Amino acid sequence: MGVIAASIPLFFLLIGVELAFARLRGRPLFRLNDSVADLALGITSQLGGIFTKIIAVGIYAGVWKLLRVQHWAPFPEWAAGAPVTFTGGVEVHGPALAAWSVSFVLIDFAYYWTHRLSHEIHILWAGHVVHHSSEEYNLTVALRQSALHGLFTWVFYLPIAFLGVPVAMFVTNYALNLLYQFWIHTRAIDRFHPWIEAVWNTPSHHRVHHGVNPKYQDKNYAGVFITFDKWFGTWVPEEEEPVYGITKPLESFNPVWANVHVFAEIGRLLRLTPRWRDKWRVVFGSPSWRPPEAGAPIVAPEVSRATFQQYDPPVPRPVAAYAFVQFLVALTGAYLLLTAGNQVPLVQLGAASFYVVLALSNLGVLLEGRAWVLVPELARHAVLAVVCIVAAGVGAWGWTPALVATAGCIASAAWLVALRPRLENDAAPGDHSPGAALLA
Image (spheres, one colour):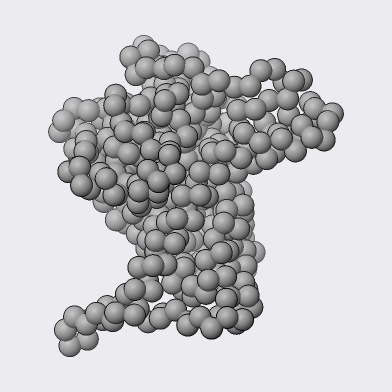
């Protein structure tokens, strides 16, 4: 299990701490619908990463093995041992510590440029936009990641493979770089001492990066060290708190649509323009540029927290409760898949991942208050019940867990049918958006 997957319990512990802080201070830091969407996208990203990481790490390993500079120039190999050991006391190994430290900085430097270009090149933005599409800013937003972005970004780390940084060192330091960035997604921390703010990426710096305000857009790309932004002219300080989100709001809690909506927009623009030069620019130009056939370039309007309207459709509380319970079931299933991924055949892993993503997609649409999702959601329960019985019948699964799972599917389907009148009609008196349910 990787560093990120192993850290999932810690993520939820810190989310719980932030939620408790929000309750004690009476600050609306969370909305149920948005946080469920964040976590659904995190699950989708991790499940997708099982497959995309095979490609990315495989290419990195191939370049390191065949093309690293040590093969054709008199450069020493990187000291790949543990930087610190604790056998019989703490022992620091200088060469290894230096190797791990330098490679960590190199990875953060590559991350800066990967991140920056992901805002400046349309096809890369299509993957990265997932992380910016939340209109909140809390620790669940840190987990809101793309399932597809890794298919594009591996190329930016190949220079590190050419330099000979070993695969295990790269993978571990890359994961630690991402792990650092989790805690800076919070409004619960204002600022640190100026010396810390001068060097490190902090919540204040990163809030700016998530701002949709024109003066904040495309700034503060740092992963760990904010110094890269200061060196390359992309740093601005936080003045007033930003408005969070993207210029053209997503207005959906569906994790599948969140992952593909900009790709769909690129496809639409490619069909509109007949000129190959413009087609190239649609894919590799600025995300805000539009061909003449599609109208004027996108210009970010001025926004303020006082007037900005978040996407928060009204959904009856019983429907939100059903969605939350089903989300917890999907979350449990996803965690079991991630922790047992190496023991599950790839075909079965793919099928189970598809089912989890389908469940999360249905629940996202349900939190948008759309009644049409009742049919695919009922079909999902029926399919799982049949699969459980068949698996038990052929001896692939025990009858006890199969019958328990089937009973759960039947109970969930009955619960959903009972909710149908509430969803198809206007919200009853007293019903409102589930957005504030986490703080109710």
